[in-house]
Image (cartoon, rainbow, N blue to C red; front, side, top):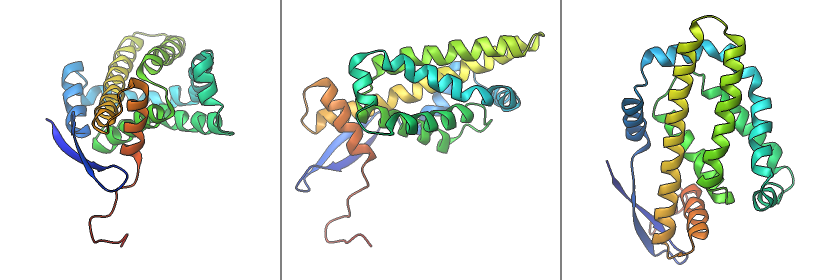
Length: 212
């Protein structure tokens, strides 16, 4: 389930690294390991109308949690409008938790979200605890909105998709770190950020080829 990748340093020298897992294959693996089924997907789709409206509230809590750390607060507010853009991205991400469609394109979008945060310097030691805030608020809302026995299956489906999400995002960090080390960076944070930046950069045209 590993595949080679090639990226170029300044000057065009290609750098080889191992991409840990293809996003689509990883998604299938995580579904199998968490027991996530089509029945869970269908239930999450139904829950969308109950859960999507709280996306702004959850986004605020998520980035408020990150912003309590002085170093992360500096990152979040380093560029005017960055936090507001992240709020919008988060709301879209949260809504997709309840889309009912969890395919390769979904996994690719999750990979990119992880890489964007890694490029900013928001590493897994911040992201994973912050995901706990997402889970806490969401489960509280579920238990309030659904008072009958259906709450148990709803909680199960939500917890499974969150486990899948964390697995996808963690793997994007590992991929960025692997490339960062391959690029010659030895500081952990620098390797993570630079590896993510390289993965998010547009591909370079091949030798002798223009942009088309």
